[in-house]
Each structure stands twice: as structure tokens, then as C-alpha cells.
Amino acid sequence: MEQHYKLFRVRELAEGDEEFINILAQTFLEEVPADAQVLKESVESNNHLATYQVAHKMKPTIDMFELGVLADLIEVQDWGKLEKKGVDITPKLQIVLAAVKQASDEIRSDFNL
Image: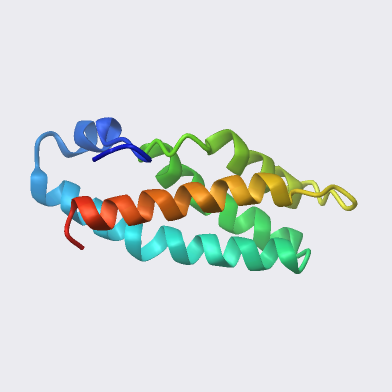
């Protein structure tokens, strides 16, 4: 449990409310993998605006669950925001996608979702 994510900030926010923690875990699973797919597709299609928007949307949740890839996600976001044509952001994207996959699998298992 909690190898690829951490619940410290989530528990702080929940103030001991286990039901709320479960809801946050469910929300993570409903939103973050889907957002990660959109992020992947937007980078692959060089859609800088969509990349920026979805990366920006993902940041608070990635940070709250402490996936350890916030800096990488910010680089992807900045690639979109600054329209860094000619820069290959794929390595950073792959780090983010792998972290989301690992955390999602682990959260699904840990919370029986």
C-alpha cells in the first residue's frame, strides 16, 4: 500500500474521515487516468493548448496524491503553454503516464475499487 502514491495530504484534508478518503480515491480513478489519456493524445497531436489545459487540471490531484512526478507534469504543461515546437516532451510524458498507471492500479487494489 502507498508505494506509488501517498495519502499524507489526503488524510490531512479529510481530517480522519475515511469515507471522504474513499471518495477522493474514487475520484482519482475516475478523472486522472482519463485525463492522462487526453494528455497523451494532445502531445501526440502537437495540440499545445489542450496539453497545457489538461496538465494544468491534473496538477492539484497529482500533487495531493504525491505521485512524485509533479515537476515532470509541469514540464509537459509548460511545453504546451509555451508552445515549444521542436522540443520532444515524450520522455517526460512517459514518466507521468507510468506514474498515473502505477498509482491507479495500486489505488484500485488498496481501496477495492
